[in-house]
Length: 406
Image 1 (tube, rainbow, N blue to C red):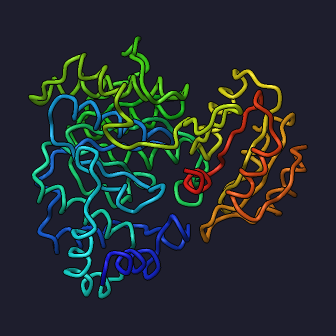
Image 2 (cartoon, rainbow, N blue to C red):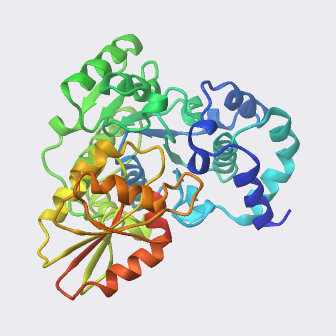
Image 3 (cartoon, one colour):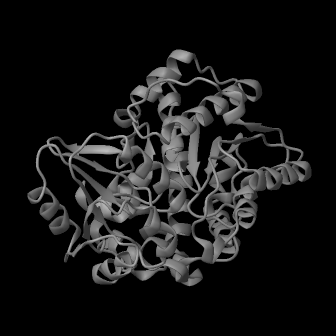
């Protein structure tokens, strides 16, 4: 198979949460362990930092990678989902995995994948780990896909575990309380391995403290320990907590491993994170006059911060291009949006995308007024046509909405 055929096979032949939702979720790590053994356990040869959390894990992972790159290390970076290209998920020093390597990996292991009915995510994790070992990376930043305890990435034993924060999301898998979600995320905390917590609440802190008692792990609450941070090319208000988390991780790494990270490396890593790692879609400005911002925040915890930041902007009229996936709890997120805005409802072009008319009708219950459009691009074009230079356009609600604009 050529590259496009290989990618099509990965996407369509096997369950993929990004496209299908619940049917792609597996309740154990059996297949991942089986695959790792088949690949001669690449994970045992990798130095890793493991990053979980409801929001901010992507930004935190990219910030960690950027700083380590500034310090001269060869850094593997595994993240999900991708915005435009599958290859974004697996990078070394900001350079995406090659098409050739992906084709070779799938061709070599296809019969094994089919025999054991491996999921998209299991195969992708195996691909990343084997690639990083082959390329002899110095350290790897591994972002959890969903949850933590049962996520395919959770076969690694990292140098440090990181949990950015806990919010309500993916309740069909992780439970519908902060405590149950914290329990799943805390599943990445390993025996005697330190953990850095970005943000916490009373409920989540108790879960984390209970877990580290059992694992005998040192625990660090970054929001208490890091008082000042540095500017970054990532401009969202929510990045303040992510940056503090990253700074605390390097304090911990300094204690346990011989990694030489200077304050200059951290400053430059924060400033150069987009060019170093290719991270997009986080409070990203894509137009001026009118100012247009897109952001991948897609749950109540993330959207609250983004919508609060919009309130600080100076504009005449607010236009919101909004699309979501069909497993979102609209009763939870729609009340967060301002009534004094013009809405352009759309459906992201994935199987899980929620019909724009259904979203429009549900939004009316919360006095959010606007029209439904046939695509994200048509909705955005309409927003541009209906706005003047002093207006503000926000595009969001789903990673997949942002992906169609960039």
